[in-house]
Length: 249
Image (tube, rainbow, N blue to C red; front, side):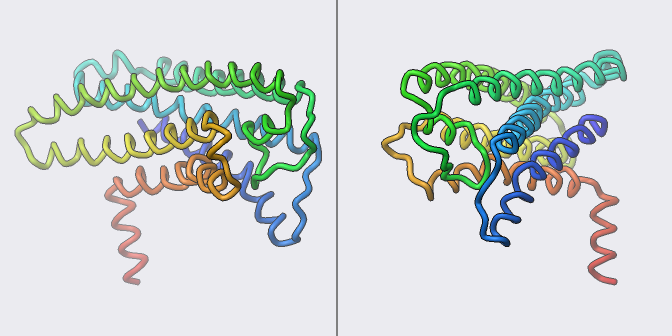
């Protein structure tokens, strides 16, 4: 689990560093410009890191399932080689996902100017600037990505349903509390990420507004990477004791 959490922390740090520093610099210097190549690079790295960050919790849900439902087979099913292969698959799939979306987004002709109503280069905002026939082509690719993400979410949901069934059979109340405290925050963050991302990418243009787009994009691009370290670190008793010692001292 800690190997996967190391990968998740790197993805969290990378995805936030892709968007927020540039947005903060723009706010401080009152300059909202970004170069064409800079926008393409930001879109690629953001899509790459955020996609891998979603695929990795899918692997974590499997890790939790094996740890709770098949504890005697944990070393067999999740050896060091299997963990490495699964983490590499998450990074590699995120890279391919970002490469396809970036290549498609920046190969489309722009007919609506070059101003984005967002604090970073986001695919839905770029689609608004594309010609109508190109927009529908790109929307089809987004729909495929949403279907893949929904499949991952179903896998996570089924894994946690099996976990909850096993947890309810645990006689120890402390054991049930430990299992629920590990799974419920993870499921809540994944649900927030997927629901807001799907809404941002597939919402009808009739209900779109700059303020709504900003809030939704913030919820899926900033909140999950910021909340993940708190969720997983606050479960560690040594970290809790160190934090209490720091506050009291």
